Structures are given as C-alpha cells and as structure tokens.
Length: 134
Ligand code: ZN
Image (cartoon, rainbow, N blue to C red; front, side):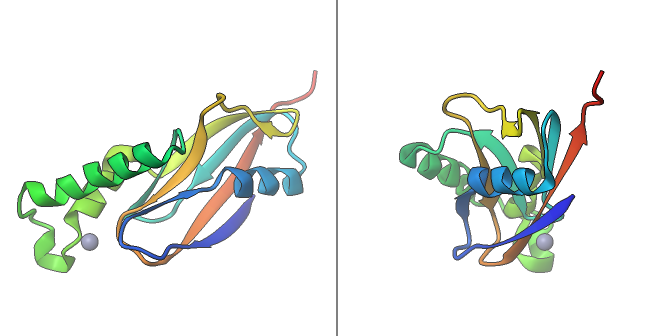
C-alpha cells in the first residue's frame, strides 16, 4: 500500500489521477488483482469517467447546483454541506481491476478526483488486492 499526496488549487476542481495511480501500482509490483484507491476525506470524491473538458465543466456545475438548492443544515457549522453531500453521493473509494500491472479501464475511462472544498492537500491511498497464483 502507498499514499500519494496531491494539491488542489480551487474550491471545486477535478484532477486526473490515472497516471499517478498507475505509476504507484508499478512501484508496488502489482500484476493481477484489484486496485483499491481511496481518499480519507469527507469533502472530496473519486470516480471513474471521461476526462472531456465539457463533461468536467458539467460535473462541476452539477456539484455547484447542489449548493444552490437550499440552505443545508451543515452550512451552519462550516458552510460546506454541498461538498459533503456530493462526496457522499460519489463516494471516496474506487475499485479497479489490474491486469498485467495495468489498470484495466475502458477506452475513455479515467480515475478522477473531485475536489469539493479546496484548495487543499489531499491524500490518496493505493492498495492492491492480489490474486493468488494457481
Ligand atoms: Zn463540513
């Protein structure tokens, strides 16, 4: 298992972690199994989807829309309820099959981190559940 550190620069932002996580798997000597990628945070999320500029903007707009829907209860504490809610819906852990040391993603799939309450430093834990040989 290894932990990566990434920095975000905006309140809402999407980072493509695919290459970083692929490199981490190579350094772990991963061959066959399942990569478990997780963020130990309540206001950012991980998800798999296309890294297309329009879709990235649409995703950020959807998240911002949550904040405009209403005044949420948690906003009384630190004014970031929409960030928590979006993180809850998307989740903070992604499982990805690993074949011959490579993330087995679809052609257009990328592993994306959605920052919801930045800018911050974020930890990303990468672990491999290895298949037993034979
Ligand atoms: Zn909060």
